[in-house]
Image (cartoon, rainbow, N blue to C red; front, side):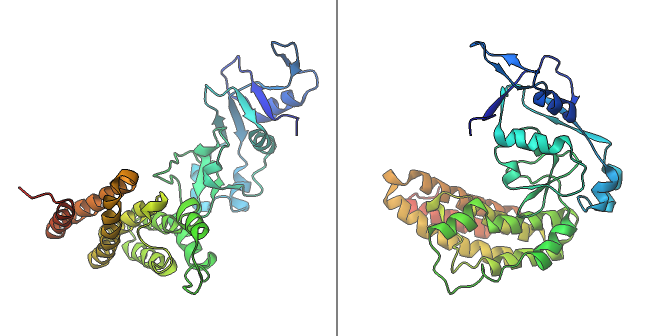
Amino acid sequence: YGTNEFVYIYDTRDTALYLSDVMNIFKHPKAKIPLQSGKQVDYIMSRKFIIPVNKENVIKYGILDEKYADMIPDEIVLTMPKNKDYLTKPELFMLDLLSNYQWDRPINLLSMGGDINIGIKEYLMYEGFSYKFVPIKNKTKSTDIGFADAEDLYYKMKNVYTWDALKRKDYFVDYQNFYTFCGVLSQRNLFVNVAKELLKIGDRERAVEILDMCQECVPVENYPLDITYLGFSNEYMVLEMIENYFMAGADEKALDLAKRFVEELFVSTEFFLMNYDDAKREFDACYNCISYVAELADHFGYKDYGDEIRKRFNDLLGVEEE
């Protein structure tokens, strides 16, 4: 504590420099900038870092499959935001690690790198429970995992990750279980992401298989389809499951899940309506989910069911149809 808690960025060139050179300057005892107080401090001299890529090692050590060999560049550039004025200690640690990185071991990060904001998020590959640093630039965001390997994800879901404990029904599920498995590290989200990647390559059969696995491994007896009162994104994962079932041509499974989900939502909606002054946000969340299910039903040719849902909601509100 007390050393390099934050490191100033002083970039007068706006030019990409080799990260190894930037870190050598940072570590040089005579390379300092003065603060207004007159104190001399270490600094980072660029917001753009060039990292050479050892293509052979990337393949040799399994960072990328050989099928991606033609996509691997000779070097990559990490770019920090222009309004970023300093580095935190974890960010400094990551830059120091990458400054001599030989691509001889995988680097995996949770939550898209969390608070590490050094441009690394543009070079992350989704691996299910983590993201791997790779030399292929892409865009990751909360609604799109970006670069991923559908075949590898399917293999991991079936042969690497194990779900025996999660799908058991003989334990008490408390708030922490909900928080972990439906919030921070949403298990349904993981299954949905893999199913979406399989759909991208046209593999409907295995997409349905993964969605079926989700229902088995995240049982509703322990983890209800609707937990809007906790404020997680769980309900949106269920909506995506329904939509993906439809997209995979498994209409019966989509409708079955939709109907069970809607039943849970209406129980919650009625309760939140009775306590509307204190539960407006939760009521609105339920309404949004119910409306989306109705829209999905319309879109995939089940307008009668969509109309049924809307009528039921209007009846709950005491609204007469025109």
